[in-house]
Structure formats: structure tokens, C-alpha cells
Amino acid sequence: QKEVEQNSGPLSVPEGAIASLNCTYSDRGSQSFFWYRQYSGKSPELIMSIYSNGDKEDGRFTAQLNKASQYVSLLIRDSQPSDSATYLCAAGDKAAGNKLTFGGGTRVLVKP
Amino acid sequence: EAQVTQNPRYLITVTGKKLTVTCSQNMNHEYMSWYRQDPGLGLRQIYYSMNVEVTDKGDVPEGYKVSRKEKRNFPLILESPSPNQTSLYFCASSIDRGRDSPLHFGNGTRLTVT
Image (cartoon, rainbow over all chains, first blue to last red; front, side):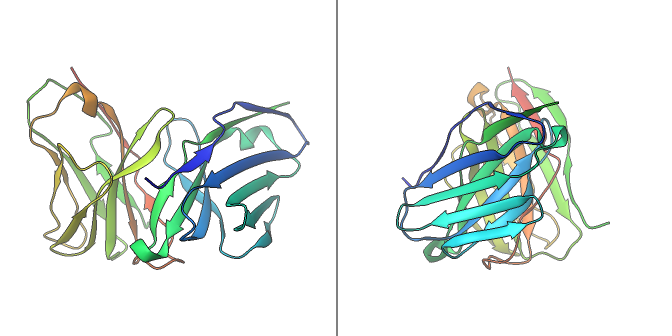
């Protein structure tokens, strides 16, 4: 069973600080990785994708991928109360037609 | 507006009473999928469809049926719902199954089976 693991949280972060979210995956065949943000009662929305080892930055978000360690992370800089949400990590398996396996999500709470 | 529309948003039903949750997308997407979301378990795929008349099982297909007779519609059918199917359901679509094709999610259907 392919698995994507996340700490459920909540991760409590002061406003303006950096939120650091971690995700590990079990399937070495995974080649694409995604972070989705989900506000309470709402549908997930894609915020970042990463396919190669290293860092990828988009605005206040930075995704980091280490395929050797099977580890993906998301950094949120200058955290805002509007960043309070659950963040879902997902891994795509090319051999399975890029089927996504989702983690359980990490709840982030940014306190003013 | 490009969107995935699910109906109903909320549904309370009783064990054994057949129900259908509709899903429609207006983006001409080939790929559509149904997920259920339960606390701590993340999103789990129920069924997916690569195109019209092409459907396949996901990770948790038991107790569900789907059909894809038209490109835009992908209904989820529960022939005999049971309490363990109480969950939050999401329909999603993407252009195709390419790596760079992001999933667009509907607003969700919260189903309670008593």
C-alpha cells in the first residue's frame, strides 16, 4: 500500500513567522509531488507542485524535495492568519498514470 | 466560469436507500475522479474515468458505482448506502492524466447515512 504521511498538527505559528510542513512517501516510483491547501469546509486547491530534487519557490511558498530520503516539505514565509488551513501533500505515480496518493493533511494555525 | 459542480452539497439518508451524487465540469476535461475524505485519512480515490465510457476502480471502490456517458458528467451512485459511507465526497477533473495537469475540485458533498 503506497502511503503519504503527514503530521496532523495543529502546527501553531505566530503571524510573520515561517511555517514548516513535512511529508514523507513510501513509493520510490513517485515522481511528482503537490501541496494543496484546504480551508475548513472547502475543497482543496493546488498551491505548489515539484518534480525535481531541490527547492522551488513561488511567492511566500517554498517546496523542497529530497527523493533519496523520500521527503517533501513546504515552507510558508511571513505566515498570515489567512494561511490557517489544512495542507495536503500528494505524490503522483507515473507508472500508475500519475495517480495521486494524498496524505492526511497538516492543520496550520497562524495566530495574530 | 470554469468549474466542477457537485450536487447536492449536503445529503442525509437512511441505510439502503439508493442515491446519486452528480458531478459536472464545463472545462472539456478528459479525466474525472471521485474521492472521499475522512478525518486523518486524507483523500482516497473511489473511481476515476479517463474519458467517455472509460472508468476504473480507485483505492476504495466497494459500495460505489459510476458512469461516464458524457464527457462533462460523472455521477457517483450508492446503490445501498451504509453508515460507513458517511463522509465528505469530492469530484475532481483535469485536462488529462499528465503530470502537469492539476486537479480541479468541486465544492464537496457531505453525506450522512443513518
